Length: 106
Image (cartoon, rainbow, N blue to C red):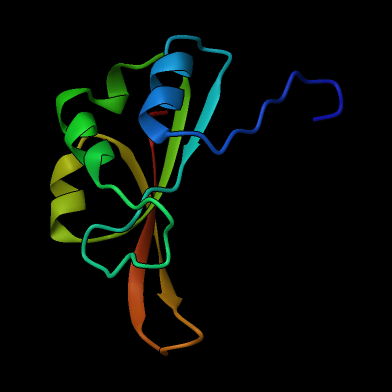
């Protein structure tokens, strides 16, 4: 990464997505709030990204897009045409066990 033009932002997800999705040279990593969990620890939690991605498939975008999400039935429907790698996760504080997914358009 020393020789690359890397920009890391913590801006609104939809604004970043719109700005960078059209270039094949861009990598977009999204870590939105989980759909099926309590997201009170997020300062400005919004699930609007899911509605947007329902209407604008990541498969159609030029940028390399990756999301890390809890693997639930609704996420499986939303990203059924994408590449998915799942893994088991145990939360240290609550000992809750779940499955997470790394989802990408490439």
